[in-house]
Image (cartoon, rainbow, N blue to C red; front, top):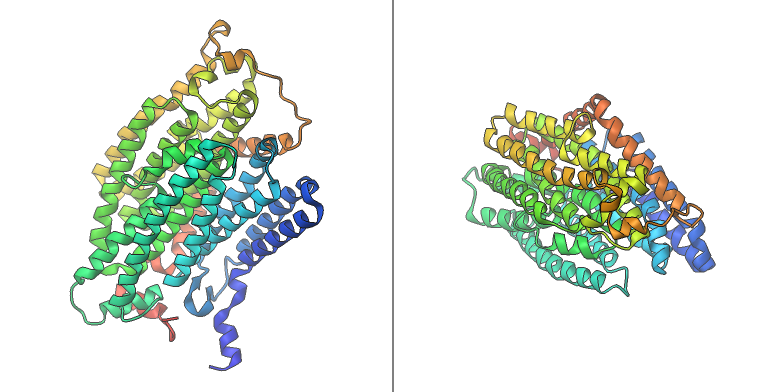
Length: 518
């Protein structure tokens, strides 16, 4: 292979968005080194600008003829573009949510942003990783950055405890996932590219070897941890409660989107011989997540823990699209992640605003909030009702598309479980709304009675307000304007070769190329 062929196969232009994120990290780092604490006046906006530039680069890559880069290790196809866009957008919305929170804690804002951008970079690479080594490096980049973000409030014992729990459970999960990938590597005769692994395992024409089923179990365990699926959810409530709230917001959307991107690409490409087995496993995970997440949320007294169990239940709804494995199923997953991004981040933004002014996140302390802050009450109510699936908000259409795709595919049991648990979720969401709106002034909580007036002149308060307005408006309009978003989701599936119903042998053989093992 001459130099020209090597450059062509590297195709570094496919990772231009990630290159922009790396450049943004360097700008924030150097700016903080030169200007110190005063860099907090501009570094958040530089980071947001960099993420928006990365999103623009992703848009321009939509019609790229050759999305394969780094000798097949990275695939910049339509599925990758959409999930990378979701991760970058979640980070761009998280940053304005973080400014006031981090400044009030007395920690370095620039360092926080750098770690957040590094987690974003790992998630974006993970969404397009098509090779075992790149998958693991990207996954660990995302995971280690997430551990650091979780324990960022160094003087807060709850943050330290959450980070330690997340680190210990995450390290065990990574070891299990790595063991599954090592089995794949051995079974395929030393291949690391996902498509080459499938070709080599299928080459003898025999049934799936036992080792492949074992590898599948370990790989699913690692994926289930990342998306917080039951029974791999144990870290979620404690980490959500103890972590800084902006970090929780990013983990609930960005990290979850990266996990589902990994699940789709890895399972569809590398495990075609055991597709029935992994569909069965994810059916069980979906049912357990929907039931446990929504039922246990009923008993929560902390707003962050309630949203943690809500996140587990939402992962169960998303897994319905993965289980049915049809074009409509994958498209409904993409659409739901779009709307989930805004309604969940909007809800966490409201929690941040309330916590900054009262110092608590207990649900009982929201009692009578409408009397003192009607706008915050309205924003939180819209986001919670959308999460519950109340029409005409975005969450209703997200669940409608997923349940309709499941019903068309014959997954009647899954859809019925989803409908029943959705009704359960509406109860605990409306309970919070009722507490804020219905209570009389004399029934207001002590936190609301002493509710201080908002000071928009403080650094970081205006960006927090802008972030809330963007999230609430998007949640409100995405339902009414759902057709363009769902068209985009459908186009994503149609443009992604691995999701098309082609014979497995033909499909993977066409994706294979010389040098499948790196």
